[in-house]
Length: 69
Image (cartoon, rainbow, N blue to C red):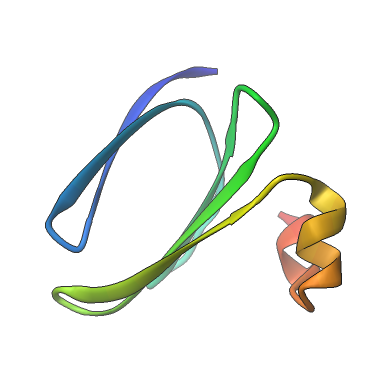
């Protein structure tokens, strides 16, 4: 794991973690403390950030495709 800086919707986010997967509009990271962060971008300055405390939280939220990454 390494220190990462992610620019998302004109904001900078810094944390220690690793990139698990990425496509054109979405990227998923796992932090050093085991949390998952998903950055989604719809337009230049529009998007969302979702965080999950556990892998099980991802599945419970109806997004099991992330686990495949």
